[in-house]
Amino acid sequence: MTVTADDEEATYARVTRRILPFLFLCYVVAFLDRVNVGFAKLQMLADLQLSDAVYGAGAGIFFVGYFLFEVPSNILLERVGARRWIARIMITWGVLSALMAFVSGKASFYLLRFALGAAEAGFFPGIILYLTYWYPAARRARIVALFMLAIAFAGVVGGPFSGWVLSAGLPGLRGWQWLFVAEAVPSILIGLWVPFYLSDGVADAAWLSEDEKALLTRNLAAGRREVRDLSVVQTLKNPWVLLFSLVYFCISAGLYGISFWLPQVIRNAGVSDTVNVGLLAAVPYGSAAVAMVLVGRSSDRSGERRWHFALSAVVGGLGLIGSALAGPHLALAVAALALATCGVLSSFPVSWTMPTAILGGTAAAAGIALVNSIGGLAGYVSPLVVGWISERTHRLDYGLYVVAGCMFAGAVLVIVLVPARSSSRR
Image 1 (cartoon, rainbow, N blue to C red):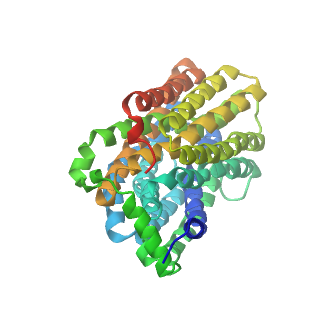
Image 2 (image 1 turned 30 degrees about the vertical axis):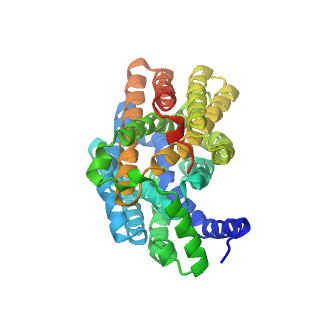
Image 3 (image 1 turned 90 degrees about the vertical axis):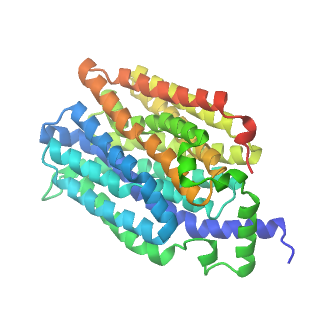
């Protein structure tokens, strides 16, 4: 049977309509914790008499658990199937998220944040791995960008919702406690739905015809490279995997610098009402949603990865510096945060096209997980450093300069060390 370009586009459109909205929904509820914990801080610290440094350490210790369990979790996903493992992850983290409502002090805050990270370990790299089961490298930047729009969407929806819950005065619990309960319910319900909706891969997709399965399988096979035959141990030692892990650490510092501290930057600009903080927090994420799609589409069409990534990272760093310099000027602060969020979030989809282009099978499961786990450590280091600097200097801007420097470093690493041919589309 002759396959036309229209047939191919129609097949990928069908795949995208089937799996991407659902994966998007899963990631929205996953990322709501990143949004909620930043808003919960506005009440929780006073209620529990915790300092900024304790908050930074507790918010970040999530990523220690994430780091320790990331690689084994992703290897298990490859072995037992995406449906079962993604469901397990979502249900477990939902239960632990609900328990966050009952934090009573520093020790319980640290313990539950660590356990939450261990439970969620493997989710994001598992989804990135899962997308490689369906899309060849040449299509991945725009697909990952569409998937990662969930971060922006979680910010747009979660910010106003979180601000409303904090100020609503619902009965029984404090506002910050209701935030964690509200986050847990959809995670558990969607996790129960996962095994009945997702297919483990092309061969298991009953909703595809045999011709469509053959087309997808051929395109995936055509994009394979020899380095895909690396063992797990070789993958973990591969210098390219280690380089991309360091790059991902740099941009993750920017992401968590924004998600954990954005509400505080807006409050420092003179906004005291939590509902208004939430509404203004939606502006940067809404802007980033547009930027992510445009950058991902441009990168796929041109086949260029390095400069798309580097320019996005530099813009993100400049925006962070601008938000620190804005001080009490609200319009400037929100505009700078929008620029920062656009740059930071746009760098992520392009960054994932590089390691996923050279890895597959169990090697991909280990390599992608290692990149994400080392990068995820920035989620520990970034809020810890910013919180430590803020507490000792009483100035949030100094910490944001450090985070901006990480973004610049990531851009330099890719431009200097990644050859153009190694990051081109396949």
